[in-house]
Image (cartoon, rainbow, N blue to C red):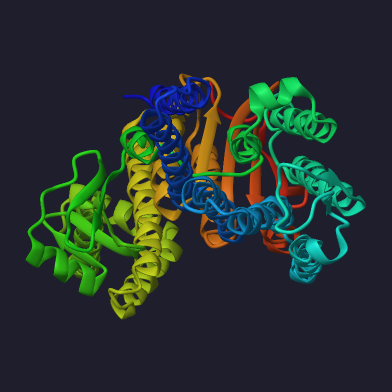
Length: 557
């Protein structure tokens, strides 16, 4: 079942519950037992709704302080209905009903204040004295509550014409009652204004959702003050009306995104492409999963928890603790391990061939083919000496890196793969150069080399892209190699600062041009001083453009 269907069913169930409760209020049978049963069913419906709402807020509201304020509001609504039940079904003497009537004003005054506090906590800036402001608001609310409880002494909230015991069936409103109602309306209006001002959601299309119940609440208050008969007939239950409209205001803020919630966990896990993971509780009971996460025994899970990661048959199982359970996910690093093994083998092969070449140079009777091979291998070694030295340094650093430093370990492996890819592709370019007639290479040879190097840069978390124009055009091999060497030179010097690179090789008129767009957190002008032929320009704070001309009117066909 999709999230929208679940939400529609939830709100449909709430509407049905409200209509049932309203029917229990209107359809009052003459039988005393049935009338009391209907009233008790109505109370149970409302209490169940607000208890469920408190659980919903506790589980889904993202901001911690806002969540506490909203759950306190829900608890106050439950308290309000409890006091109402006590007043009409337990206390039948005037004094008990009088005390319960005054208790109504604890949640009535505190709920708007806590809603305003929740709005103030959202987007709270460092150093902002939010807590002091909220304490001042709560202090004023407490003063209003005390004025209600001491009303029998001064009668500024309610005025009674009769003598004690005083009853809520015969009274009029005092000046402090107007102050209390104005305070409630002010808190609700200011709460919505603050939520809209602090909202990061583009547009204002759904901000009317909390406004509608707010307008209804204001209209009900005015009608109640004027004691309109229609209000008493249709919405005469103050507790039910106030709680429903206030809850609708806060839920409207949640629906339109003014108050952020976290929902749709299961759908998020199922639609997360390429992620093999699962969330379990403390007893390893699975709750959410995605992809093809393998079944693990409890013993293996405990080992993973103790070590944070376990590698088995090319699959690495990772773990982080979360509140109430564990998060496990798997990574297939078999390709990375194979590439690492290929690089080791290639290094050993190059070392062995180097030793062989040193010996064969001493033999005067070497065959011509062997001498040519020796010459080519020596040339490749000389041209890539810097990369071989860098590769050796990276291998030493990798051996010194402890396995628990996984991020650093992976980054070194990524650098090794990038350098190794360059060595392999450049060797192929050189061999292709001498195998062709006329010492020529095509732009397609350069494109394939750049494609493999850009793909290996993903292991270093660098976004790389390229564009090579006219793949079938043949050019002087030295120019093609210069284009590829320039790319490797930039990558090796910007391994740790570069975030993305776009490398373009194109022919404009009779010139072969290189243009590079780099996003890096470093000043490239000082670095590029090593290569004066490179023209460096800063386009934005971290964006750089580098360009140069490889040749003009020379070689190629």
